[in-house]
Amino acid sequence: MTSTDRPRLAVRSPADLIAAVPYLLGFHPADSVVVVAMRGRRITFAARADLPEPASEADPPARHLAEVIARQQADSATVIGYGPAARVTPAVDAVRAALAGAGLAVLDALRVTDGRWWSYLCTEPECCPPDGSPYDPGASAVPAAAVVAGQVALPDRAALVAQVAPVGGPVRVAMRRATDRAERRLTDLLDQAPPADLLGGRSLRAAGVAAVRAALRRHRRGERLTDDEVAWLSLLLTHLPVRDHAWDRTDGRDADIALWTDVLRRAEPELTAAPASLLAFAAWRAGQGALAAVALERALTEHPDYTLAALLDDLLRRGVPPSELDGWPAVGEPGVVRRRRRRRGHRR
Image 1: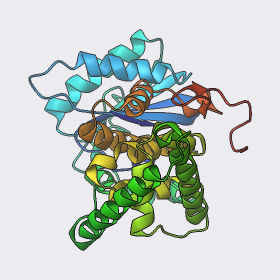
Image 2: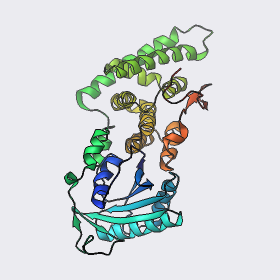
Image 3: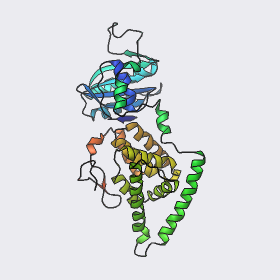
Image 4: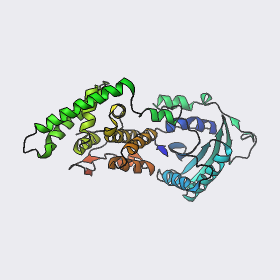
C-alpha cells in the first residue's frame, strides 16, 4: 500500500479525477484500488493498495484503507479500481462498505479498464453509459496543474522502484573499491583514537558529523558526492549517533531526497539500511508516500530488523500525515528521539 498527502488538486469530473490520480500517487496505477479523500471540495490525500488475488479475502485491505483515510480528517472519498471488472468490483464494493462503516461519505465508485471508466453509483446513461466512457488525460487541465506544482507521474510502480535500485556495472565495482578504502580509513581512525575515547565513539561521531554536514552542503549546492565520499558516509552511518545526526537534519527538501537517493543507490548492500530510511523519511516529509514506501521496502528486504525502517514503515502504513509530526525527530542521547522545539524548516 502507498499513500500521499501531496499538494491538493481540484477536479470537476470523474475524468479529471482519473487524470489526477497518477500525480497524487507518483505513478500510473494498475491492478489497484485507490481511495481519494476529500475535505470539502478539495483532494487532500490518496491511498493505493494492490487488488486482492481472485481467491483471497478483500475485506482486510479494504478495512485498512478505510482506517488510513479516516485518519486524514476527510469528510468524503471516491474509490477507483484499476483492472478487469471481475477483480475490481469485489474490491471496490469492500472498500465502499469499509468507508461507510468509518463514517465517510462515498461520492463515487469508479472502474478504469482499457482507457474507459464506469461508475458503480451513477445509473444515468447520458453521463454514465453502460459501455463506459472513454477518457483522455490530455484533455484535462489537471495534469498541467500537477506539473506546475512539481508533481510527477511515472509510467508505473516499477519505474519508481528503479529510482532506488542499486547501481550496477562499473559503478558498482568502483563503489566496492571505494568502500574497501573507507573501511581502511575507519580502522585508522579507531586506531588513532585517544585512550579516553571509549571504543572510538567520540571520534566516530565527529567524523560522521563532518561527513553529513559536508554531504548536505554539497547536495544543496547541486553538487554530487564522489565515490569515496559516498562510501565513507555510508560506512559512518552504521554508527547510530551519526545516523541520528543525519536524521535530525533531514527534511522534505528536494536536495535531501536527492542526497539520500544517491547514497542509497551507490552504497554497498550491507550499508543501505540508514540511507534507505533517511530517504524514506525525507520523501514522507515531502508528501511523496510512494517513494517512501519503495525505499522502505528496500531497507526492510535487505535489513529486516532495522528499527528506524520499521518505525517509518508503521507510520506510512497507518497513514500518519507528516503534518502531525512537524518538528520531529530530534535526537538527544544516542538512539533517543525527542521532539524539536523549533518549527519545521528552522535549523539549529
